[in-house]
Image 1 (spheres, rainbow over the protein chains, first blue to last red):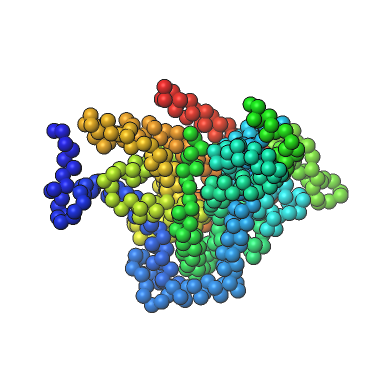
Image 2 (image 1 turned 120 degrees about the vertical axis):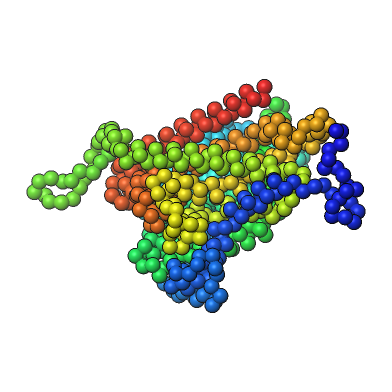
Length: 297
Length: 298
């Protein structure tokens, strides 16, 4: 009863494998595979549906793909729709997410660095405000933000969508923790003795050492802006400024009157999922999600 | 302390310069909209009477808007639906995130890389797009999962259909948060338990789960916050089904007031009520789970 039965390399059923192999835990593996299937099914279905022409979408067996190259017709139809406005939405989404993500990370880095590395009047009050900001459901603010910006005539502009998303309390919170642990005080002291100015220390020492943490803050904010719907939805009225989420939603709403638009919605959904998944997979190794939880220690 | 002092001296206004952008953004896009909404919520439009003809002017309304908002049964049924959805999404998301994280952390589990990645990917799919995809899966005419036999938009089923989209999008991110916390635990922790003959599941329940509680707490907070602002999923499913009305959840009601009825004063009052309530709930949630974790740690 002492040795665990799993440790029996000599009886390895695979046979011939030189290194000891442990038995596969069947139940946990199966559960994970089921979870993965659940996560991938909607994307697979949309892939199949996008291969079907307008008429077949509602008439053929749903999980059998159409092999008559319907997908190319669908992509062409989508590209022709209002002079290719769909691709415009795609570009807009990337623009909002990339520019907003970059600026928000910079603002977060500067604030987090100041909170961690300087003693200044109002620091505690500022930090407590930011902690409260983390608990504030930001999306609820979208309508008040719209009301205010419409008063000053800033709605239906790129800026009206970008600016409200630059203040990211959670990003500031993470940056503060990251600056505290990654930027040693002694290094800053040494720099000061060498006569480096505070600004130079921030740009050449602080930002550089905070690099890996900043990538995570950037990616979190990129996805948050990419996924945001309510803010651009209330702010924007001209469809050439829409991000993908608002654009596809408006297509769907028109589709309620004109069923032929459904196949455009399906194709557009597929095309909108593909690039972000590709981007995600390629940026995978830069993710440091331990920073999201590292904050708790 | 002495070092702090020296660090602060001679830095001039630089720290203030660093925090300036965040303070300005906070003032302009959190405080100012809040104050403006508060202001609007105490006003109301009045139709000009008499011979001067049409047109409206703004008058002070005191607390009348709040009385109307709090007496509006549409808002309360929206709050009720939000609570039902939250009662499904919060435990659902956290439970499956914890379960998958624990399974990934087991030594003899296979296919870890590919399953971890696949479960994480929905995080990068916007709620609107996710709702579109699931919407077509639910829709009788296109459903591959039996939508022609089961009514996914039935009066009870619709809650699960909406909640399912939210859980689908959130499980992966929370799973990674908990999984990362699990990976950070030193392996020696389990050695003595194994020598004592503890099973893998006993180690999970008695050692791993209690130790990653802070990460689980964080996931609870994330999902509670998301549940309070639910909008994208029901709003996107609305064109596909009559089961979802235009005031189905509180945020949809605010949107409907502001843009459907062009009544910005009611929308502002509802926004104030919802923001305060949501802030209170998230504060209390943060407090309660934090104190519970501290108690368990003792």
